[in-house]
Image 1 (cartoon, rainbow, N blue to C red):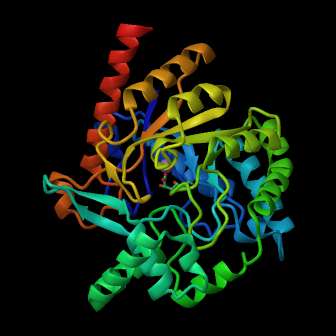
Image 2 (cartoon, rainbow, N blue to C red):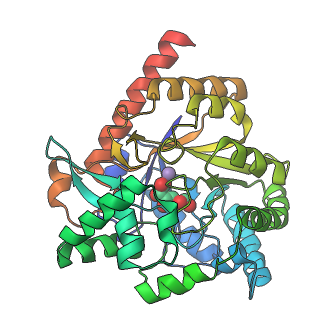
Length: 387
Ligand code: CS2
Ligand code: MN
């Protein structure tokens, strides 16, 4: 695996030198200042690339060139937005950066209900709590019909939790969902949020898949011509939320995806934390099955709970067997004769992270460094002993 670290650019308190010190050789970043749907200009891409290379690192993957909502909805100026996307692909290729991650999640990117969930050892982790999600949807957002998406047991707990919640807690929960996690949409007001969600009224999973297929049939030929690989990030969490269709969450979804355009450029970001939140996803099996379409790896672990809640556990410690995952990766890398870029996807807040309030949530320096170091050791052990 090529070891990489995500970097949010000059505003990130985790600097390029820190990334190099963590032992990574690659950087994963985006033009975070460019508005979603606009063309990425060569000059801007080169500025970032030069900065990375001056630090002795390589820009391994773009995460992400975001897909404009109008493309997902196939409305308004979506054709122009697709043309812009194609131009961005040509421009990044011209700059020699040929790996592009993206996602096709409606409205929200990754979603959590708690950003600083305390662990027993004093560290904090990100958490998705089904009961809190129900509180948000039913009581804070007041989404019509939301109750039907929850079990009786969760509804009961949500009612109680809401009654006992202080106003500060309510604001915290709303902010957590609306203010956007790093790399996601901009801060949203509750009103904007409701409007954006309403646009998806009546859209089925198949409708959204058709829109993804349309997008890929336009964009993949351009990617292929320019030697670019596209790698879709799975939906996180891998379930429908807020009544929105989510379409990249299972083996079947990945099968559909690769079938939309039969090209190596139409690939996958294999995020074990996202896919692993659904116990039906057999991660090592999926790695072997989609071997030649996996272009990028996000390795982290979640601890699943019976009601669909989960928290981000130690990289080697959650519900997924990371030994089997890394073994499967080592196997496909050997078959393909390549190394796949990997980043430790999120980390706990530990030690000095706990007092560095400037770090992007989930993207701590030490928490991720720990994850990377563990994964690096695991990989070395596997390669030395098994292959
Ligand atoms: C998140 C996302 O889980 C994750 O990796 O950090 O923001 C992710 O980067 C995007 O969904 C990719 O487009
Ligand atoms: Mn991920």
